[in-house]
Image (cartoon, rainbow, N blue to C red; front, side, top):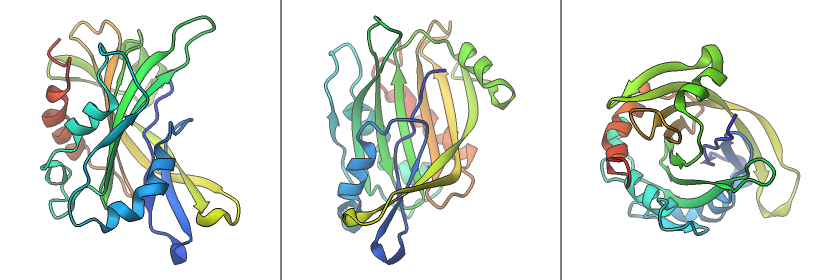
Amino acid sequence: MTERTAGAAQGPSAGAQVALALVLGAGLAGGFWYMAKTSQEGAAAARPAVCRASSGTLPARYVSGTRLCEALNRPDLPALLGTPGQQAQTAWGSDGTLKGPEGADRTPTPSGTVTLPTYEVELSVSYDRLRVAQFGALLGNTAEPTTFQGRPAVLYSDRTIALRIPLGGKGKAESGTGGIARHLLVAKDAKDGGGSYELVIWRRDMGMPDDAALLRVAERVLPTVPGWAG
């Protein structure tokens, strides 16, 4: 199964000594480091966060993590999530890649991430050859096949991992079970020829994400991603 990472988010800390990150899968691709470095700055900002430049560089034929972040970091994102009084605290892009089989090229997997007080949202594009139908089959009974704007799609859930990392270099990091993340995986074309767009939301308070919010964000954001029209 292709590794898919939802990113990192910081939550409340005890005595401002512990950062709580909600992450999915393996590999943070620099996202958690960025969050730990900028979370206090973002939370205290009077204005909504703007997207920081992508970490890494992809060839021009691929959409950049910065562009994905900009597509996601809309002024109406809080309202689409059902939290209209909130604003983006941090926002960044990553030009990540996944290592293929031995001897194969690395697969670009750019992503953009936006954090708000209640939700964290990630938008990514995978340029692999895995079809959405194949990915849904790998998920088994947890997959919910559907369509999105005429394209094959899958809704599914994943359990996050809670990482408690002491700030200031004191103590050891601890991990435990986190909350639920909801994913919408959409084929890059109506024929499901390989590659996909993925939108993920999860709550920083470990509550259950709202599917209606996930779909509202998808309907507004995905058509604005470069390459969506084919």
